[in-house]
Image (tube, rainbow, N blue to C red):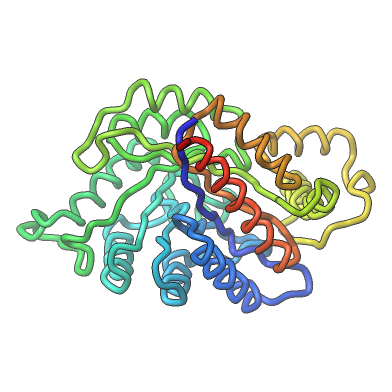
Length: 337
């Protein structure tokens, strides 16, 4: 097993009986904790029209997190590119990179990050997304290039900035695209695990090296809930399960604290659906987390885990990321020796 990195995916979750201001304070606290624990990066995801997620103005929130930290890479996981003009995103991330040199990542995806009505309000054209998305990535690369200084349309800030672009996906389409463009690939295993194995195989087998990324690079986004014991982690995970029950029921209310009995909340069909969606979730005490990570790596051999943790209590959330850091450090030390 090779060494691997770990990072944080934050959705800026809004909790029941808490304010959005509280959400942002907690996100910054998590980022500072991740930086202290030497996590590689801290990404925020673009979502819209959801009372449970406050990261809709993703670029603004990235600036807030980057300004409140010192060294950890901060970026998008991701910007839903067809929701935006390529030029505007180039300018926004060029501004961020100019403010925080060497610390900004741009992860991009093609999904709307919302429902159909809201996607329409965002100005998306569903008829040309599959064709336009690759073109938008090329536009970003052009705007960031020093050679674009001779073009009629320039991204200032942005031009000449070294901002790595990551392609996000939850199916095989983006795996083909990331391979063809020679870009790193992040898979959304935290909610859409079914095509993960196939997507990784496509990406690795068809990768075309680029100057910036001569080797393929895979990030697996997964759910992670760690505690001192398996029993405590299982109890904390009830917030995660309730969140996915709400997705099934199309109920976008804020995240709820754990319940004593999750079986009193979901029906058997909902339970089966939720557990299928959350197949790649690492829930347990340190020993269980280590075993599950080892099994995953033995099969997938990814370069980086990006962990998202739907844990209601902030102290428990910070502790969970500390446990993951300790487990991964132990695993990487064994891999070296």
